[in-house]
Image 1 (spheres, rainbow, N blue to C red):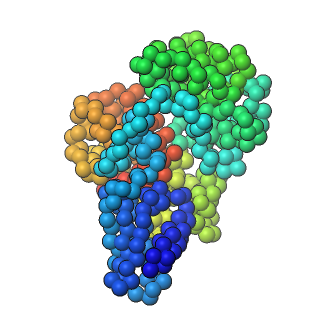
Image 2 (cartoon, rainbow, N blue to C red; image 1 turned 90 degrees about the vertical axis):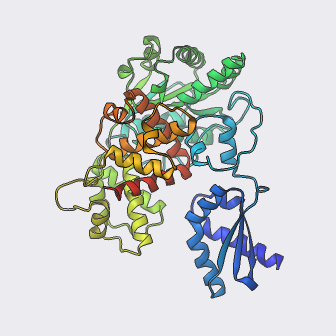
Length: 470
C-alpha cells in the first residue's frame, strides 16, 4: 500500500505541474485509501489548503476518476509539521511590506531567523530567469530600448552606454529588459556579479544599515557589483539620505567602469523631487523611452502569451480584436487574455470572435472599447475589501498597518489598470491621499505581480470579479 500511495501522489503531482511549479503543491503530502475511495492531502496551512483547492481540486478529482474508474473523495488535513513554501518564508524573514505578506496573512508564521541587511552576503542576483530577450516582443514602440539593452548585455563592461536610463509607463516592458540584460550578461560571463534591485529595496537596505550602524554592509552589497540594474528609480524622490547614498554608489561604480542600467516610470526631467546632481548622472549616458505598443506588437504579444497558456491555434481575428480594444499596456492585455482563457476553458466555450466579444465587452458593437461600462472606484474597493475580509471604509481610512496598506495598494493598482481616473482622482477616492502615494502603491504592486505568480493570479481573480460588478 505504501509504495502504491507514494507512486500515485508523486505521479499525480507531476500531472498537475504542467506550468510554473506550485510551491504549495510541492509541500503537500497525499495518501490514498482505496477501501474508502478517498485521497487524503496533508497541507501546511489553511492558505495552502485554499490555494490547492482553488487551483487543482477539479483536476485531482478528474485524474482519480480516470485512473480508478470511480469517483474519489478528497480530504484535506492541516499538518503543522510540513514546512511552508520557502518563498513565503523568505519574504516573511525579509520583513518588508510586501503584498505576499497580505496574501499569506492567514498562514501560521514561523519565527524569523536573525538576518543582516537583506541580500548582503548572499549570491542571489534578484534576476527572474523567465525574462529573456528571446521572449521580448519587439516593435516600433520599444525597438531602440531593446537594441541598446541587447548591446549592453553582450558587452557589460561599461564601455558602450553607461548609464542607460529606460523610462515609460507601467506594464510596458522596462522590468523585462532589466532582467534580460542581467540574464544574458551572466550567461556570457558566468563569474559576473549582477544585481537586479528596486529603488525601494535599496532604500530599505539603507534604512536597515543605518539602524544597525553598519553602513559598510550596504556599500559592500552594491559597490562590489559588475552590473547594477535598478528599477523604479522614481521611488528615490523626496528621500534625501537615500539619494546621497545612491549618488556615491553611482559614482563609485561609474568610475570603475561598472555597468549601470536604470528604469523609471518618469524621465529624469519629470522627477521634480530628485536632486539636480542625481539627475545629471542619469543624463551622462543614454535615455530611451518605451511607449505603448502599437496594434501589431500587441497582436504578437497576444500570440506569444496564448502559447504560454497552452492555447493551440489562437485565432488571428480574436487576437486582432483584442489588440485593437485593449490599448493601455501589456499588463492589461495579459489580463484580458487570462479572462478570455478562464471563461472559455471553464465553460467549455469555443474560442471564437463572437464569444470573446461577449466576454470582454457585454455591449460589443456600440463603439465602446474593452472596458464597456465604466468601472467605478467604489466597485473596485468593494470587491477587493470583500476578498480580504475587510470593510471598504478601511481602504479610505488613515490606518497604515501593513495589511491595510497593502490591500489599499492592490485596490489602487486595479483602479489604475481598470479606470481612466487620474492619479489625483484615485488618491481622492482613497481618503484624500496625494498622487505620489498612488504612484508608489501601484509601482509596488506592479513589481510584485511581475515576480509573484500567486499574487498575479489573485489580481486576475479580482479583475474578473470587478468586471462582473459593472
